[in-house]
Every structure is written in C-alpha cells, then in structure tokens.
Image: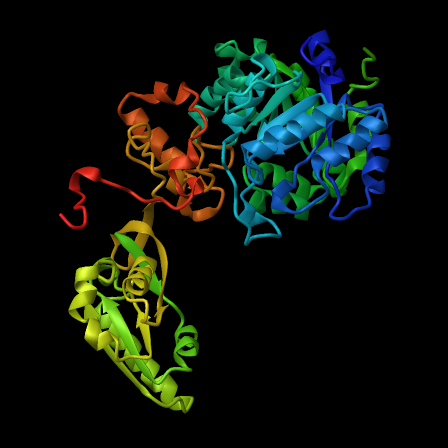
Length: 305
Length: 226
C-alpha cells in the first residue's frame, strides 16, 4: 500500500473501479459541488477535482478537495503544469497532504488561450511527465525536484492521463509506458467514443504487459444532447467522436436517453476488455445521472474496503 | 533573423503627435529583410504619417532615412549629428535597436514603430515562422533539429501531449505539433527509442527566467585604456 487511499484499495482488490468527476464553480459558493458529491457518494470510489479545466478560472481543486475530505469523501486532486511553476506545485502538494488528500492526477492542462484569461502567461516550467516523476521522487526518494530533502515525507497515490485518440497513434503506448516508468499507478484516459480505436490501443498495451503495471481506467462521458456531442467533437481538445455515433444520437427519438445508453454500453464493453481496471465517469453538467449509469452498468454497490 | 511587424499607423501617429520634427528611422538588416522596417518601409511609413498628420492638422515635418543597423554604436555614430536635430525618432528597428539608440545617446527621444515578434525565418514569401526563443541551453540535438521549447505551445520536453491530432497542435490548424514532427523525424532515422527516455525538467536559469542576460567573451574583450 502506498497511500492507503480508497482508490488504491479498490484497484488493489481487483474490483472494477469507478471514479467520478467534479468541476469546481466559477464563484465562492461550493454548495452545488457538495450536493453532487453527496449524490454520487455511494456510486464512485473517488472523485477527480478538476484544476481550472479548459483554462477557465474556478475555485481551486485543493480547496474543493479539502471540503470533500471534511465530508469523509475521497478526492483525486488534478494538478496541471499550466498555471504553476515547480515551486508552487511542490508547495501545493505538501499543503494538500496536510489537508488529508491522498491521490494526485498529473496533467499538462489545456492551453491558456482556450479559457477566459486568454491574455495570461502560461507557465509550463515542467511538463506532465516531469511532474509525475518529480512527485514520485518526492514520495519515494524524499527529495524535492531541486534536490533538497523533505523535512517530513509524503505518500501520494499518483496517476496520469493518456489519450489513445491523440496522434501519432503508434506513440500513444510508448507514452503510456513512459508515464508508468515516471511513476503512475493509475491512468485515466480521455473520453472513449471510438471503442474500436481504444481496443486497438489496449491490444498494444497488453502486448507490452503494461496493464499489469498500471491500473487503466477508461474515461467515459454521457452525451446529453446532439449539440453537446457536436460541441465536443469540434471544440474539446483531444476528443474524437465518430460520425456513426453522432448519427446514432441524431437518429434517436429520445436523444438524451440514447446518449445515456451509449455511455452504459461503453462501460459494459470496457468491463470485457482485458486489462481495463475501471471506468472514469466525466458527467460534466450532468452529475446527477452518475448513480443511474453505475447501477445500469452493473457496478453497484461499490466495494467497502 | 529577428522578425517584426509595423505597429498600427494610429498608434505611431499618437506617439508622434506631440512632436514637431519627427524622423522615421529605418534599419536595413533583420527587419529590412523581413520587410517590416527597412528603407522602403521607412519611406512608406513616413509618407503615411505625413498624410495622417495633415488630416489631423498636426504641425511639423516628418523626414526619413535608414541606417544599416540600429543595434551597433558605429552605425548610429555615423548619423549622430543628423539624429540630434529631431524632436522624436520613430525607430523601425526591433526592440534591441530602439534601446541601443537611447543607451548610446541619452538625449535622443526614440519610440518604437515596430512590434518585435520573434526569431525565425521566412517559410514562404510573406510568411515568417518563429524558430528560437533564445533559452540559452539548446536541445536541438535531442529533438532532431526541431525546437520543442519554441514550437510546442507548452514547451514540453516529453511530448507529444494528448492534444496532438493529425499532426496539429491543440491550438489549431495553423500550428504544427512540434512533437509530431520530432516523432516522424526520429522514426525516419530509426531512432524512435529516443522518445522512451524521460527528459528531466529544464534548467530555465539560462533563459530570461534567470534574469536579464549578458554574454561575456573575455578572450575578445578590449580593456579600456590598453
């Protein structure tokens, strides 16, 4: 056991993992976030808390994570390298530890030009790989990125993201391996809409035995409307939505219900793919649907470990 | 070379408005070659400025000429007496030229007529692409001659990131993914294995982040008085 987090325990138990996602608000009232956390608390093993996603200013992920900890729930703190240099990141990581957080997800972050502060200066002092390796070394070697020793240790369970739908495709498994070597214990993937491509990627992952070294959680997003699907296809960096899927939803009488069906079918297929350890459900602006998804996908109740 | 583009005429006119004797001073090296601030552009800018001032009823005169480089004292010295006659010099040099002029001759009033954009080269007629950020610690030997510090929007050293699609950056169609290019070039040389190595965090202290930089070559310095 590395951090003793619930996420780590469920992964180690071999149960199919379910993580959810909460986006902090663009204001100081986090009632809604707490409400969504309560809504899905019996249906997810841990919650990602996004870090100014799509470069839009929001309440800090660590502050929201602290609230979850107070509620007896388990956050996975997302940390991007876009807004903070290595001094600030390491400081925040120590701070989050003192507040009881146990899981960190390392990522680059969408470029600042996508958000609501387009005139801001991007930091990118380190990249997501270096962040992962740096935090692993803080944990395992007890030293900061600059070499100084920590006065007291940290024990985070570390994860990273991978996007099987980005290019060059053949490099995506190399990159996964690199992240495993850098210190990732779990991986959450970009939203899966193109299952064929995902399965091809998983084949390559298995060929290298990487599924035995890291827990791969497939990312899913329930499509709420045709507009949402089109928006994601055209505007969200790193997401691929096949035309057949758009056609399926567009041809359905009840589009919202069809979007939900697609999501549940995807999770069911993920459960059958060797080497997939769980699912990461990103129900952005549709958080209340998570319990239904988990139940219909046959993943309820969640293990109590 | 250093790439620049002319500031909007309105902005130049506003800077020049309070001054009677104005000189638009061209610079014939980098910014001359990238067609932003050479002799031709200086004459054009002066002509446009004259028309603008006439329309706005601004009194005074606008003259123009060019020198080889505004970033070297010897070229400034050749025209120093002439420059001193003006109330304002609108420099069509890069930011380095403007600063060289005022540091060398403190009494000169110099304003920038260009926005300096980057260090790069013309990829085609009329298109200049950025290629170097001057980070002070070149990594081109690791990346097959393609600079990820400059050409990757996130200056990633372990790329490509998850935003790379069909050879393009997440910023959009106009930006190539530098790491896709590096990947393909490594592949063509049978060196894809290089990408498995985790590149450590960059030491940015050699870049501007370490503070303003001064390069000293003791072997070519001439001590004053000798």
